[in-house]
Image 1 (cartoon, rainbow, N blue to C red):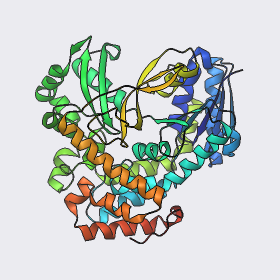
Image 2 (cartoon, one colour):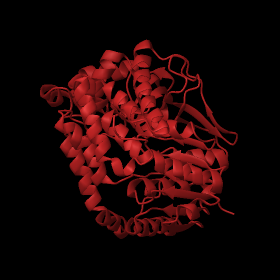
Image 3 (cartoon, rainbow, N blue to C red):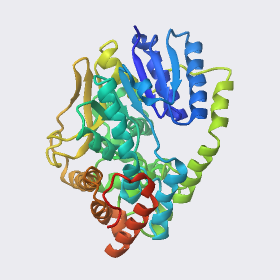
Length: 443
């Protein structure tokens, strides 16, 4: 009997198609059952048609099923993938627009800072409901989360369940491929060790055919104008920190106090080569709003294509499933999990992003040891702020949300303590419909 894979938030076209394609491409899974669950019936129906097209094109023996009933979708699942957006884009937009009224220019707002914290608070109770269903309906399933904010959600869940859950982000392999392209290497010739926290991990080593490739990367950053201008923020971080970071310049610029606090800095670092071009808040917001309005058109374009690409991609999920309960080929990936000594100079309860082996025996994090002091300081500070927000959600304590925002590097570089408190209160009040699990929303 084929394995059962359940997608929660299956209306996310890009993730659902790519992950389902990858799963079906493994011999062990081409007879699997793919169960799609979403609260948006229109998106769900289109997603089912799209996956059926993959099955038909590949002549797979698998099947696809769609439902708005989460419990039905989860019952007996072997693997669960979560790609949800609680509240939708029309709610998320306030995470960007409210800080902007206080002078804080957020680029994406899905990871940390006031925007990421609000997104976390809305999403946390829904994610916990999903995990509680998993505990009852498929307790042995492997749960892979793609929903942001990754670190806070993974910490929140892993501290409250024994279900095997980890979080996945494509920035690690994506950046590795970018660096390989810069130095003229093939992806399969590159090896690396990467660790830190989600969206702020660093390549502790980066090798091309076993030899240190950092000198080649440095040469490109310093002497190739195209490379220098492709990722201004990340390149500056590399030059000043000594190691290359994983996440795009647009994201990184909003986690740090050095790049978005003045108009001239935004123009210099965040407008022409952020990976989000341009890197100002309105562009990203408008992109998401447009995507929200044109989803049906994008689904239709896929369904009308004469040819469908079945080639396996680079996302980790299918490879992990294959290692755990497919053909058993061990797979090394970067996952998000509680530290518990893996990185020796970060707090034990930090949610870190580090190498993990997947095999038939389960998921086993690899010991990293100590990060360079400057990297550990940067990562541990952000992780501690995230833990304030996680504890706030667990305890229903809005004061800890204010404290988390108080220490956010970009926010603290822009506002007074009283201004941060006022902004936090406005954001909490705006999200009141999603925060019923808090004791009070008054700071």
